[in-house]
Image (cartoon, rainbow, N blue to C red):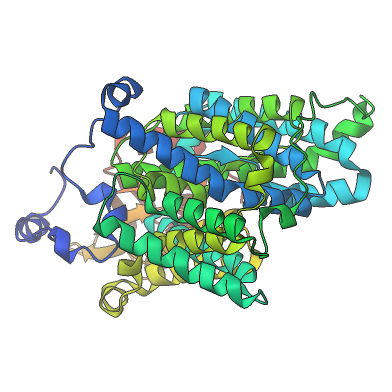
Length: 527
């Protein structure tokens, strides 16, 4: 490559890439390191032509729905809305995203992160302000998707993504613990029976998902034997009646807009972050690409529809998505469409049976999902020993923030900021400046190597011997690039310091982009 010295080229020639077994981070997330192309996605038409794949999609959607119901009901209680509101909104979200979404397999419903954000508004001003909040949040998400801002996801480092996955596993597991504490001893027996079916059944057949069989068998046993254990109906009333279109009970004025705007922004971006991260996770599990922009605007449209018929917003349900794609092996929109339709059937016609599903059975299923979600390779001592400390720190902080706040979006945000700070700190000290004095002592040349931006510019100013140099100074930037105004200001400062000592500075070697950037700003940045 032009501009590089022979020593560098020689060093590069002897570098050998790590083999797949040597890659420190998780193999499951090392998409960027793979040389093989992504797989061709399985289409709906392909699944319809394959009885095996079709049955897999249908059964995955059904077991996902059963795991979805108690969480949706619990989240509705957190948000301060009627459980039927969240269930109906989840039906609308699941069906709409199955058709409009850009990532097949992602399960979208009324989610806990949205419930946490919207709860203060409901408790402080009333449930009537949920509708304008959801509608405004949906519009923001549509604009975000159509503007192509979903591409910002590429700036989330792998260490943050792994922290996100590990924290997700921890949160899913912790959310199930209350359902197995302080329960009758019969519940523990059912809990153990569920685990036994989940782990033993696959040894004999994998045609039907073992979690679905476990839930059906345990529920049937409870109903037939007349046992009394905590069940889904204990989480909230299931009336079996659809609530209809959401009534406009709020005043349409500027005051309402100002009241709901902060919450709407939070709902929009928390929902987008969790949805896009889930889509990225499914991309990796299935080794197929997705359209993140479409997933973004589709979420906005779906939330608007759910606001009008249902009443509350949602986003990707990460635990249920992992259950659908990883455990159920679903790969198309059929699974999520079935999930929405099956949820509709449960809510309207089978609510009494759904209400009798033991919570310990669902807890056992989700605990298995939690354990399989955690990226155990990333926390092996051998992996941690080989990884750079900043990378490990970012992963640990991401997990810690998520677990402490209970909000995946907060953890990702803090993780990204920390990764940026640590990266800027590392690259701020990678520039080198070599000073070469001419034999006659009349000129001096400085060769600068490395990225020049706000972090490294301060170091650059300190690398010159202003008082000792001759009157003619050349700064060679052929192996450096100017990336921001701070660097231009630093170069202006260097020229000023030399001028104070009666010396002139010539800057050479800049590429075309850096030259144009420098010419536009030099001398116009003030003191």
